[in-house]
Amino acid sequence: MKKWQKVQQTTEYFVDGIALVLATLITYLVFGKGLHRILLYTADEWKSYCFMMFVAYSAIAVGFASSIDLAKRQRIMELLAVLRNCSLTYMSFAVLLLVFKNPMIDSRYLFIGSYLLFILFSCLGRYVLKRVLTNNFSNSRNATLVGVVTTPDRAEQFVQSLQEDWTKRVDGVTILHADALAATASVGNPGAYRAMHSRTVEQRCCGVAVLPDLSSFLSWVRLSSIDEVYINFSGKEANWSTENLNAFIEELEDMGVLVHINIPTLEQFVEESKFNHMRCDIVAGYPMVGVSAAVQNSKMLGLKRFIDIIGAIVGLIVSAPIILLVAVPLLLESRGGLFFKQQRVGRNGRLFYMYKLRSMYANAEQRKKEFEEKNHMQGLMFKMDNDPRITKVGRFIRKFSIDELPQFYNVLRGDMSLVGTRPPTLDEFEQYSSHHKRRLSMRPGITGLWQVSGRSQIEDFEEVVRLDCQYIDNWSPSLDIKILFKTLGVVFTGHGAQ
Image (tube, rainbow, N blue to C red; front, top):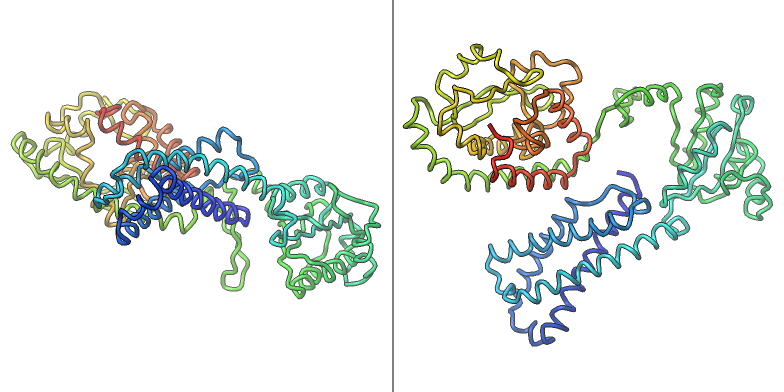
């Protein structure tokens, strides 16, 4: 996670948290008849109330934390985000209060009043935060102070891009031509530091002082407050020898400066490849660049797994009476077991057994080849209208996705997630092209973007792949929550089911 994302998400968490506390206090003090209302409840009731508020707020604030730079957010989008977060926080809070029977939910007027004040204070807090961070952070003592070494063909664009990051302040630039790159740099010309601070520098790039050569740059770094140096030169002009480059970087490292350097040979690869996320590691003494189409935050994936476990436990408890209810008519209609298990392909090709309620006659798999010509899916999946292998009870439980309930057990085991991609059968997987396998880079889910986008109404397998890859590329806890809410609507209406 980049520094601006950490600063932004942390400050937004505390600003919105302060707004929530203020909204609650003002509501009880002003509209709740002052201290009299507060003293009606015991200390334990207040502790329980505050703890549940903290849990509800933190879950929504962390799950819906925005990764979009606040400097680039439109006002209407910011307002909608505040409304969403405040509404979900109070909905979750109300559920907790009701489940644990906290007596402090006795007045709906106070509850609604604090909710409205929370929205107001959050909007004001976000507005002030945006002004303070974007206008003042780069000039504060917490800003990252940056120096740049680059070539003429990319100097202006690169410096401007760095300046868009409000956590950074670019203080000096050295623009080098091919002949300068070949020269050996060493610390010298301390007059460059005096010139920078006496404001006698004549040449500037995007408002940033330009140092004439590498020696001046090193002297300036040694005598100035600099946190990071970016070295960015093109392959065409990069005849900087390995020895000179190493010496330059080592001298910067000796000063305790963090050095970022581009790799010209990878630039064309980045432009032409879908794998635009890179990470560098030292493996067995060799520098290795890891590339992938999408990088998931390990902490967010941990949160996803935690939600999966809680959701699976709750799902199994809720599912038990429903399964018992449909078990008798299902078993009476056709011979066979209550549950059906089938080998499916999970994350990155791992095999597992997926469990469902049996919705077909016992010999359904053996009869599949009889109906292959009636398959209306374009591609590798099998779907047909009015499938005669499905029982009457099976058709009902499929319409409302009751047959999927045993998959909560798969989620608890870790084979699946509540939300993910559709797990293919082994037959489908063996026919995959290379680009199809990318949809298996995350755990398969009980529901997903494909399921809430029409389910059986989608008849092109490539469209299923596109939706699954779209989910992977844009995954976040908030997207999972959106899909879960949409799934409830799809399940209760039976939309798109067969």
